[in-house]
Length: 364
Image (cartoon, rainbow, N blue to C red; front, side, top):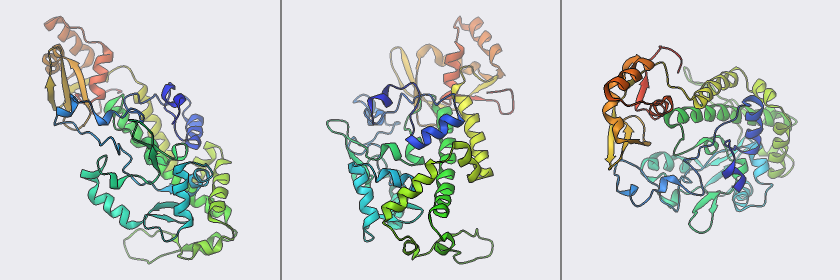
């Protein structure tokens, strides 16, 4: 993590993904200024800690309680860097007996038992349990806590995970769309890299057991590594060289129609993130009042965990949003209460789920 990343106007993805996104989404992705690794908003302040409706993380772990699967082309660059995170990754590659990480031609991933523990313990352990700490997380020093030790080569999940979003629900859905696209590319391009690096890629593939009415997937043979004559690190570096030599357009073409459809969704969601005006028609959504202070109130939509601070004077006027055209609603509020709501404030209420769009009516 660098000072440049903290100061940039746009969010910075891992080096390779940043190049792809820059080529395909030239408008850029606005910074998520509410969520930073160096000053974790999810650890909370003493005052926030008293709000039982909000969830906070252990400062020792923050959100680094997830063991990511890294596709071969990201592994190739991460192990080439002399960092504590890269050292942990190299141990998984070199030690077949490691009880946590498993190195295959396609990726380095957690062993199945680690994944099983995560699935069953995630609800209460994520962000809390030091025993679930990511093996690539390193001590950031001082009060910073853990930070990513393979930051420039992290995977799709870690690249798109934010505990808080500047644009609330709108931002969340954009990042989920981007994660889906990058996840698809990771899977497609890791298989493609194998086909380009090995002399006889078919020799490492196993058709697996065929069962009626179940998806039939190609997997790797147990002896797949025996078909690579060099070191494992050299294989991963060769995969990185192949994938990095492609343009973003070539990557999407190789990854197929599904990658193209994912990209359409990403573009649509990014347009929403950049939007500053509210949708054409809005109605008030179910919400809770988390805390009311002298001049402001903390609201939380029922379907969304992030809280929103608003002036107390706003609460009585929310009932006016009944699905009528937004401009009409704002004029009714002005006449009845002498309060002028700015389009920007209304948009923020929508972004955080306090207001919701009437489905199928107008752009949003």
